[in-house]
Image (cartoon, rainbow over all chains, first blue to last red; front, top):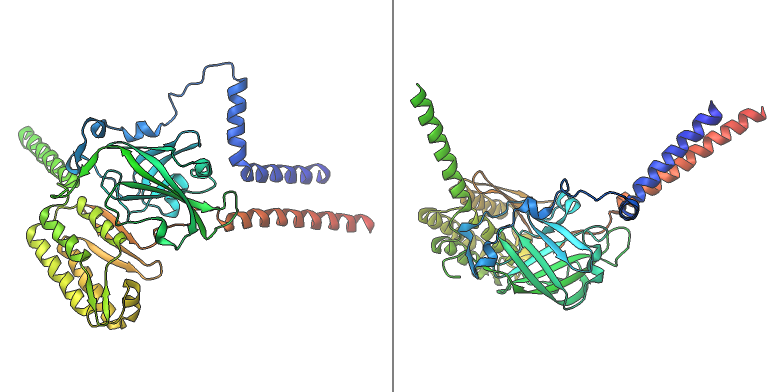
Length: 216
Length: 189
């Protein structure tokens, strides 16, 4: 029994451990393998699509100016948008708020920044090993699509920066024009927390402005 | 009886629809804007001047977007802001964090109490977490708002996760070694 039982337990334990450690690699590889070997048409009807969850309205596409009174504003912890960058693999749900629990589920907007369309800076962070891994492929000129619950917004990447996390020069929270800042830890592929951050700076190129004060 | 029940149901539905309307609010009114203007204005200290960080102003904006504040409430809140500005004028410092660290404990408590009173004016409660440097406003109508001064978060792989994986592997190796060694010892006897 000892010759059989103990080695078996250790083999199972080792496989379980390897599975958990290599899970980020196994999942996409197995998906590709299934896609290539599968003989049935995949059924995506059960898959949760962020756009379905968000029930994206065309409100923002129909008018150049929308009123905040016509919108349901997100509360802390709500998913309010989906962010994609073609050709980079970046495709993530955007949450309002950016604590540890939120950053495990998607990318998070800092509450001290403004929502897209509100005429200021939108600052969004995401983990380098998951949702924002693809930021390393982003180039100046790329288009960032942010589909919110109140309309679709397109931003054009204007700059890429690597700065210390305490350096506030990479973003301006008092800006009076719509711009989007994405950031993640740098260098890419490093284990553990780092002090540097990789910033992707983008300017709004299309999307409706939101009227939320008596003046704007 | 049926009429009474149906009237009650209609009343409840109307109440709920009114609540959902207040949740969307009418944006930031001209009156509410005065709160933001007051907070954005330069604050005089005993040896210079400071401004409240933009991240705080933006978070108050997000709050006001979800909350309707009456003209009377706005006036009371602005009076509270002026009270705390008057206290700040006696403290030295040229930055927000500098003024806060220069404040005697009793003065800090006084300013925090004024902030709590200002939140109470609109039916919200304010609390401060000194260790995480966050201010939380809990409003039964508008939700919870955490005023967090740290804009940039940790977005790397947690060192703890890596360490625990390595530690698990080492533990597995150590346990295997002990079992093998004890078996060898038992066989050699």
